[in-house]
Length: 271
Image 1 (tube, rainbow, N blue to C red):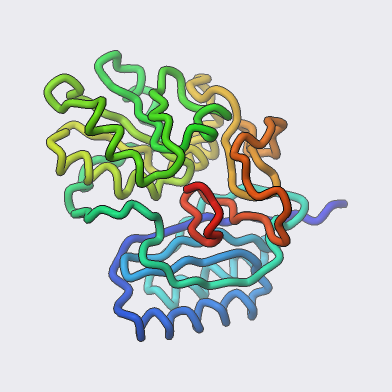
Image 2 (image 1 turned 90 degrees about the horizontal axis):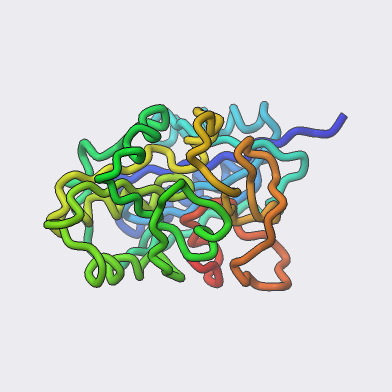
């Protein structure tokens, strides 16, 4: 019988303190990875943290409890299953942002924009709703929601330029957005609000949580979901997909890129 591994993706936006606090937190997170035999990457910044890790189920459970105690949070990860760990390292990295946007964001403006997965199909079935895929072009071409718009971006920080050139709050009165795990939308929904778009929706937990919860029962998701590890894509059942890698990622790598749409762990990733 093959060994089962759980891949856990989770993030949280909340002030974590300055450089000294981040260094102390980095050591505690690294210890947590090592003690629980968990592999992967945790990115921390003053704005919060973003984790993409893998372990056997019992170790994953203990790891989440330990992380929750450190942070004072109840962590609810997005979970997918694999038979071989896609990660070999245990890393905690300090970055300027946990997802590179390079624009100030008032997170308070995102209040009331989240849509639960079971409600998502109804939202995007409204013909007045513009469905915006906030991911990169190669992710869109691998799979997306029915009738979604491709901004043709190569990295997340290009998305505001697309909006300024192509969208207008006077004519695009309803905008629904999504990404792989939800983190990009946590920044982009309040950004759109600040630009005058008032009726904004973001898919809570992203594509991964949507597929986990709904099973794509209405067939609104088309294709496969690109992920940033050696599996390359996941099918709607969250099993390893068959689509080719369209990202032109580094051809030779000692360690796969962590499985998160918002990865900053590898400077060569195209996020």
